Amino acid sequence: MKIALMDSGIGLLAAAAAVRRLRPDADLVVSSDPGSMPWGPRTPEDVTARALAVARAAAAHRPDALIVACNTASVHALPALRAALEPALPVIGTVPAIKPAAAGGGPVAIWATPATTGSPYQRGLIAEFAGSVEVTEVPCPGLADAIEHGDEAGIDRAVAAAAALTPPGLRAVVLGCTHYELVAGRIRAAVQQPGLPPLVLHGSAGAVAAQALRRIGAEAAPTAEPSGTFTVLLAGRPGTLPEPALAYAEGRALQAAAPAR
Image (cartoon, rainbow, N blue to C red):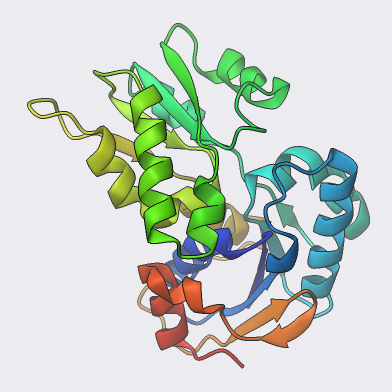
């Protein structure tokens, strides 16, 4: 079994680690173009062109499924990716976990990139899934970029700025960018209020990993032999995980489990 994942940069690490936990025997191919990151400020046409290039590089390795581990690419490029690659290659997009967050009751905040915050796409998901639950959209300028480059001070500043825009008394925060899952603990610490129940953070990594297995008719087997290989593609060329990726537990775990080849 071979699962490919694509993103502009290292936001795909959380979903890749989730796939590895479910199927330690699966070969992983992670394809990104960090030189073009971030994709959020780019036009939809530019995002689509870049996403197609990154996806085709992954598809050349003949995976059984491709996870689009990027909210921006899923918003703008998913129809084009599916038109280009399916049905031969199942394509699984990433959707902010608004539905499960709202199911737990409100109030809920959605942390997302400025381009996604307030977008018709996100507003449509809120209207469809949030019902009467109070939802606050919180833009997080610079957070994904700081995470991508392992900029600790930049992460602290961006998290603090977003936390200041987040209303008190929340039950849950939706992590509306795959990069944010890499610093979930720091987001929780910034938003959690003393005396309130533990804040629930809703990412998408586990859900897309499980969906990828369902699409190819595979079962989770977390106790399988950890024999899966790990291939890194940077702008279509073989490479290794960028150094900032190793600042995060997911990046370290992936490299330790199966050294990049």
